[in-house]
Image 1 (tube, one colour):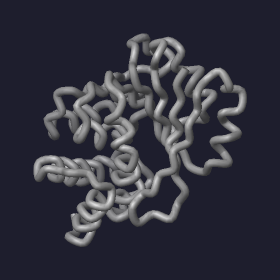
Image 2: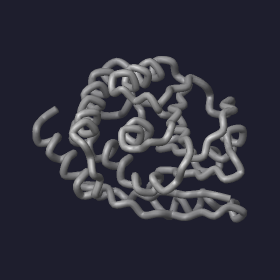
Image 3: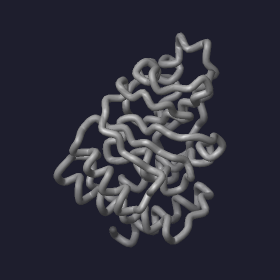
Length: 207
């Protein structure tokens, strides 16, 4: 990576008040390098721009890190694809994390990253989400589907107290998506991603 983009990443972590070790920072850098390499073959994400990956992917995913830390249990990352949000979260969280992805080529990448970064509490599962029967305390997703669909396809893998932590964009869109979910407690948490002007929110849903 270019030095200016490494500095940008470190500055972003500082702005988010994330206390990171040298090992954690190195894992993020290796993750980005491997992502760029594999992206040429698999189209894991829609960009090869280092700065864009740092801001719109790594820092975006880590902005609500403190929200995840407050909830115990295991995490399901739906439609993990290139490892977002699961891989960056797994570098900083002690939770057991399952990366759920239906495409074997992407699972190959995820397994490679898990082994390369030595993330023993993280596993990749090649399965359609609506077929997963394992139960999770936290369900997260990013740029996967609208809230109603996510609720529908995860019915088999929820517990009575499962919490949804969904990465979302505009609040106006979220308000439309949660119409009809009055039986749940829905909280929209504004996120300020470092160096980004885009509107980002975390939608937290619990019974």
